Length: 277
Length: 101
Picture 1 (cartoon, each protein chain N blue to C red):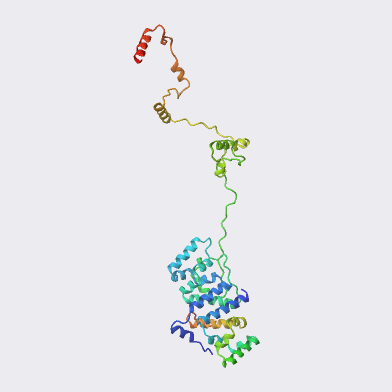
Picture 2: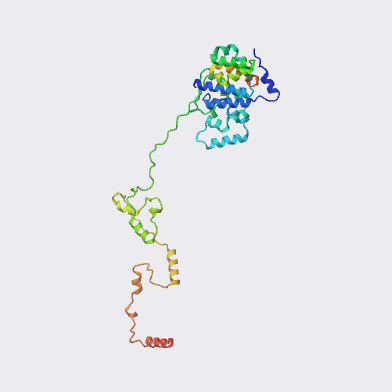
């Protein structure tokens, strides 16, 4: 005899005394805590389509945020992010009960909770929920084979092969002491382009092309000459060609002047000298 | 899944069902009939049930479950019996069409 057959329904109809969702929360949460069920069991019933139809937008936002920031998105992340109370609150009771029923029947049959590794319930079709009531484990799709990964060898160097640092450049140190500044090695990480290091290990150097000093542009020279003329006139500071100065100083014999015999020069110079005085 | 885990889970489900009025003590005893109790409860527990009823002057389902707690139910009774109780309650609540499969 089933004495209390209609009592629960009456209580539910008379004012919602039955806390069905609380019962679901306790049942489902304890099943997960005790290992009776795994999150995949939940998502086999509470499919993404079910969540899309029933979960409020704020919870969806929370779920998406968690999924975006997670290294791996799986059923455990979904269940833990949403939370069993929220699932039982928003997902239809029939679906939650379907999940609990599967867990219970499987438990009676002595089955084990399905492993979560390698299964992504998010990619499962909603039709899988129809087969969830059976206690038989549902074969899960095998994960795709891992992509061939590149070898872990260090990447080929693009620049020139520079030997490992041996000692710091003494020139840099001397200059640093003189100038009162710290050597670069003390302030920055060791540079791999030290000149002294290259000199110390000269045998390891590769043949290199002779570097040609860049010729100063004409514009720069003329500008530098103008500025020097304005500040301090030194006409012989810059000599463009080695033979120019010789050509400029070459004097013919007829151009020479006998200063002692020249009256004009003496008188002219004397007048001018006396005038200045 | 070990038997301890399953037992703990059934105990929790029974406790939650009673707390949330999913089923009443009378609903539990509708499945955990006197024959079932007598067949599976250990003698000392049967003795306690009888002693409590004698002290109170009556044996009600509530009083039985005060002695035979959900933990003891899950420990001694067949889980199929408890599941039938749970499934029947779910059917009454309208969330399941099957009754105690």
